[in-house]
Image 1: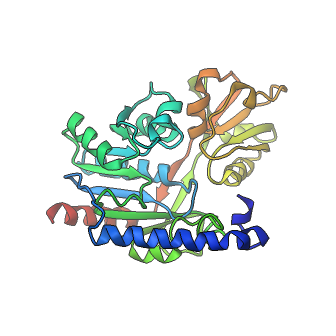
Image 2: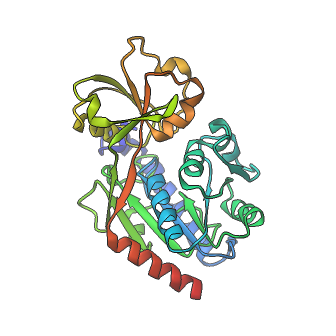
Length: 326
């Protein structure tokens, strides 16, 4: 939302509502800390990857890299998500497994991407505790759970909290609805680690999202260097938290992107990515999941991977080992 960027008239008009929202956030967390509200344990270590602002910030690539690190060191991770954007995310929705055959309208786009890229079991439910129980029942070999989002979901006890901050920072610094914050910025001081993505102003472990190739959506074996599209006009489609970041990535390879931003988690119709001129259409991997059924030969996906500060890997494994011992 535009008024989340600066403290203009609309933001100040909504400021009283954000004070009320802040009071609810404060007392809700306090009641969980005092055990007035009940929290549920998963029975195995839980790593929560979340953020403070509404919208995406690079959590999903970070989750993928974390489970990759864990598997490299002998852990057997499972992934839990709310499944935002899918019908399962509705209040009271029953846990269900997400896999490459799932429908984005049912389980959301990110869980399908997580299942495809990670090779780990992925379960979704609005109540993360229920998703954890279902995952453990169906996959008893799992010995650690990583949640994609859920920093504010205090009904699930967590062993490690990781907060991602991207290039947008904290917007105008107001809580919702006057600003983008789900919790006050001071919440950063209580998490176990901060991962800063494209943000040099925030102290924490550094993360970059790196990609070098485009893959044809209708033929995953047709993979080409992104620089081979240099000088070409491309329609850049992005329904992520910060579409501008994606457009700039493509421009760095010499492409001439025509930007087509959509709301985060937007469920596409075929007509929305048909621009009538035959020029390449390039989209994020999360969006390609939702467009695969009606993709055409000139539709391409730009795949990225999270590159992390090596110190983060050492910290994570030490922290997790301590959590398991406790």
